[in-house]
Image (cartoon, rainbow, N blue to C red):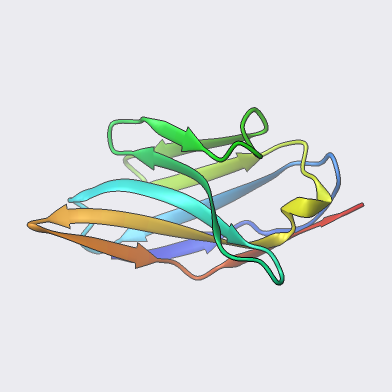
Length: 117
């Protein structure tokens, strides 16, 4: 599975941004995809996940402001980020979990989001 993330950039506080993560390769057994972020000097943290069935999970810090969605035919997961805050500045990475007898985890390259105050 290959994951291609895009959509990062510079945005002012209060603004919006949409990240995309396109999956390719052995995608038929992907059962969950999600976004994680790592801010400078901090550990990586979960932002949001979505299962194959559409169930979502959000970090408390983004709940109500971020929305994760998926486009099945395009094999793409989106992260719609609204009301961005400066503390949201981080490298955002997408992740896919695939179950095919065993559990496999794949990471895409990060995309930088910078929120200016």
